[in-house]
Image (cartoon, rainbow, N blue to C red; front, side, top):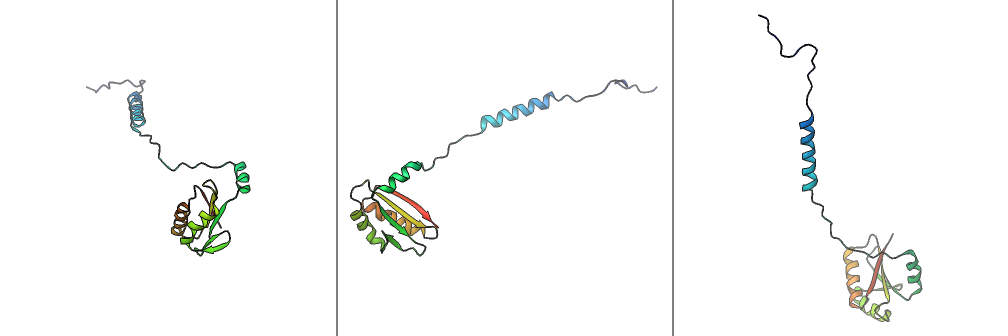
Length: 133
């Protein structure tokens, strides 16, 4: 007795993809729901407008410069870091007088921080900084 096949010759077999698609959608929903969207906290910086730069140039300001050899200059004359607070106090007539620290990109960060702290001790409220090549 010959064996009879369950399928006839003209019927084609096909794979049902519906369960696989359902499984992919369930995984997609799982990953979307379990993903945590956290907003990283950082330092907020108020960037000035370009028009504010020209207004700042006209004001009286105290300029502190740090060169590549980590020497500190106040208005073009070399001073010690200990003298920066007194120079800022003498140059800033009111607390709103801008104090600008221009540091060379090869200067040490510790010198910059020491100058920043000394300017704060000298009464500077409006501190800003920039780097010079």
